[in-house]
Image (cartoon, rainbow, N blue to C red; front, side):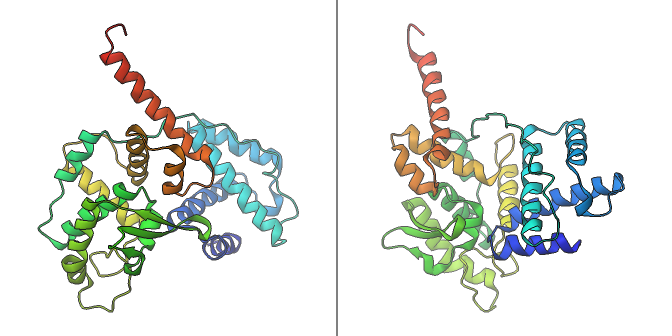
Length: 296
């Protein structure tokens, strides 16, 4: 690995406390830029100029990447060069003047309640892995937490008397999130039986969710589990962990929750991050009106 990239990855992991999933994205995007540098015969990060970055942008658009992906690549490189400047590994930031393309305004993708029922019904709970998967699905939907937050949960973070979980969020922030009776039942069943079986007599590391080898479940592991569950259900399309988070927020708002409460539960620093879900619920109201009002 390039020494500059190695230092940057360590900075993301140690100082910024980024999730493994985020680190992998940075690693991939910066490596892509290194491939471009090699194609353009640019041997050192110090030699990259603004004009080179413009050429790189053109190549990204030629690949027909979405504006969102291009924006992420540029934002990634900007952070990388800011770090290099701080460490005095380069003299200037050629990305600083590059404008990030505005992303398409897409509504969050979510499950309707009937769709979610199909997903829950497809879960088998006869095996230890099946019980773990059902508990995982109930917790993700029942709390709206991020996958990275879910993987950090320890047994000591759960309070079954108050039905709450202590969530370790972004930027070292912590919050308590309640969960319902469905999640509680599945979590208690998993912890009392399946988790012990999955540990396979290994020393208990304390993390709530365990993989099939007995180690802590990772972000990638959660994604693979959800994909397999989705494939075994009667649903069509794609699933991603954030879709359950979007579903959590949308269902709360559809059923009368106020925006501030949803903001607190999601752990959003700014209300504007939560307001995107009001567009989803407004669309839901519009469709309901159009399909039910006699004069629509």
